[in-house]
Length: 381
Image (cartoon, rainbow, N blue to C red):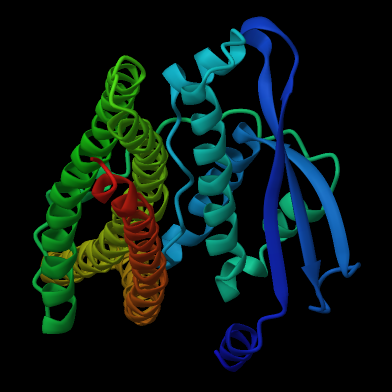
C-alpha cells in the first residue's frame, strides 16, 4: 500500500499517442499510432522510448489486464469502443472531414485510455503494461483480437447478497444512478454538437446570401456594410465549427469515457459479489460434510468416518481462505472506488474549465467582430 501511494503521489511518467498513420491498403489497412513515453521510474530500463501500436494492441492489453486484475477487485480502465463505420471510411481512403475527425477522436481516446492505465499504481507494475509501452514487438498471444465481452453482462448476475456493509450498497446505487444521468447528458451534448454544426452551416449560407446582396447594391455605404457583415458571418461560421468541436472533444468524449469506466466500476462490485458467493457456497458445503459425518456416526460406519473428517478439514480450510479472499477483495474495491471518485472529480474539473474557457474565448472573439463592424453599420447614409 505504501509503495502504491508513493508512486501515485510522486508520479514521473509522461505518455502520449501521436502521428496516426495508415498502414496497408483496402480492407486490410489499419491505423498505427506512435506511443511515446518519458519517465524516471526505476522499473523501466530507459528514460525515453517510442513504439508503434495498432488499435487491436490496446484491446489486447485491456483483455489481459481485465483477466488478471478484475478478479482481485481492481477497476481496469476500458479502451475506446470499436467503430466499424469509422474505420471502414478510413480503410477505403475517403479523406473527408469526418474521417479526419474520427482518427483524431480515436487517437485522443487511446491516449486517455493508456494514461489511465499507467497512472494506476497497481496496473503500472504489470509486465504486460510495460511491454505495451516499451517493447517494439509484442508477444502475439492475446494482442491480436479481443473477444467482445459486454461489461454489462456481469451486472446482470442474479446473486442475492446479504450485504453486511451499507457503504457498498449505497455506492453501488450511486454508480447505477450516475450511469443513467451520464447517458442522458451524453445524448443532450451530442444533440448540442449537432445543433452547433447545423448553425455553422446555416451561418455560412447566410453569409453567402448577404455577400451576394451587397455586390448587387447601388448604395456604396450599404454595399460596403453588407460586404463587411458577410465577412463577420463567415468568421462566425468558423467560430461555431470550433465550438462544436470543443463541445465534442472537451465534453462529449469525457462523458463517453466515464460511461465506459462506470461499467468497470460495476464489474469490480460484481467480482466482490462473486467472491462472497464462493465463500457462501463453501460454508454450505462444509455444513453438508458435517451432516454427513453426523449420519455416519449415527449409523456406526467407522470405515467411512475418516474420509468424512478429512473432507471437513478440507472445507474448513476453504471457508477460511474464501472469507479472507472476500475481505481482501472488499478492501480493494473500497480503495478503488475512492480512487475513482477522486480521479473523476479531477478530470471533470479540468475538462469543464477547459470547456468554459473555450466558450469564453469564443464569445470574446464574437464581441470583437461585432464591435469592429458597428462603425460600418453606422456609416450607412
